[in-house]
Image (cartoon, rainbow, N blue to C red; front, side, top):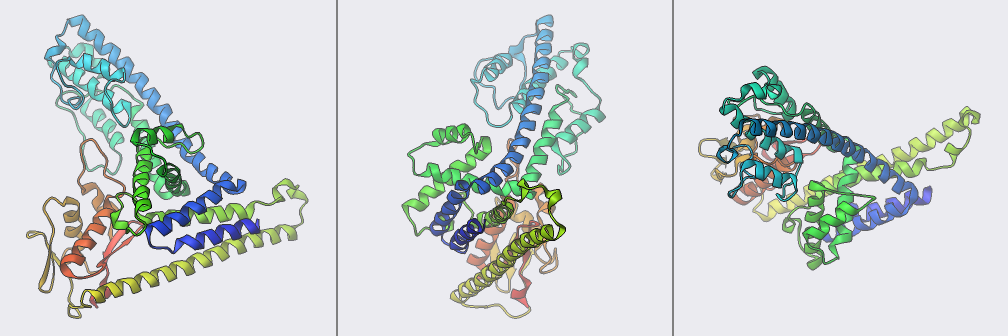
Amino acid sequence: MANTIDALEARYRLFSTRETPWAFFMGLGDYLDYAVSVPSLKKAIDREFAKRNAFLAEIDKLEDQTLKEMRSAKDELIKIIEKHKADVKKFDVDSSSILTSGNESIIEQLELFEAGKISVSGFHSEYLENFLFDIAANLLRLGYMEDLKPFMVSDREYGRYHGKLNGHDSSIFFGGNTRGNFIFSETWPKRSEKVAEMKAARQMEPWGAFVEVMKFWKARTLAAKNYGPTQVFVECWDDREYRFRDSEAADVLHFVNDLRTVANNHSVTENALKYSHIEDLRTNISTVHFHLVQAASTETSLPKLDVAAMSKALRNKRDQAWRGSVDGFMDEMNAFMDEYREDKQKQESLQQKEMGGKWWKTGSQPIYDNVARKIMLENKECQIPAKAFNLLVICERLFPPHRFLGEPLMEYEVISLFYKRADKDVSPRAFYDAVEDLNDRIEKDLKVVKMLKYQDYPRQVCIRKELFK
């Protein structure tokens, strides 16, 4: 046990303070190779992955039931079409227009979709529901309300149904739909709620950190191979131990591309990477490291003994030893983070000196003009482009006079206002990326290094008011 912890700690210390991508990735890969080679540590990794897999199994079960209900509704809608001999070539398409093209009718397009000849990403039910809605809306427009009554509900019930689909964070109010209030699956909102629950758990529970670092580990094994995107996805899907699919497989592919960039040029900085963010990896690996040390600390022969026969003194001694190990690790972790923050402050101070030092007067503070879209500090200005929508959202709520200098802006205050494509959720990294983009623009135009301070838990940003004392 002690040797395992020592070896783990040695590997962790070797790479955790490294700043350059190549040095950090090399050390992280070695750390994870060791972890999966030690049975007690691999068991801990597998245990966390099992929590992720339990979510996926429940989501798949709900998705299967949703599809079963929707396909039953599809059969009924086709019966209505056949009953009234409706001309489907004259059907308008709206919700399913992204998938319908060419001379095929919406029914022919639906059959191509169901046969897998129209490629989509994400949940099959999301697209199937769009087809069903368009078909039902056209049948209602033609006057077949009586046949559609099994699928129609009141405005109130339709609003509650879509409220569950979009979650409590949605800023959209759902009432009735002018084209018809149709419900084709009672299970669909339950699947959507389970996806939202998994998304929240991924951010808050340890298994989320394990999954993120193991994406890197999987990518590391693939980066050296001459695989294209399709083969990377196949390898991710076919991995029986650490399977990644859909968006997770896409993340692995992004990691692979970044690792190849680093392999081709060891001196590249993080700015050259498209996906990998070392700060996020550093946060996640610290969580993983703590739990692996805990797993190694408790991997003893004691569970095999008759616990009832152990003396109270022996049990106390065991508990004290465990607490001592964890406390020692936490002391080391806190010391490391203090040292890391101190080094980071020194580095930022050096960067500021290289830009001419603190050029602004004591007591000056940045303000934001939301009409001109400018951050201003004394006689310098930082123009925010109109197309940088997420940056504008943050500026309008973070800078004086809209908020006190140094007062934190929480992610949840703005994330629902961020730019969102119709077919995609807001990226989990959108808030962090917007803050980093703002910092880069401010450094370039206002000559102030790291004016904005980002914090991960809870996710927030503030203006470093110590710069303007």
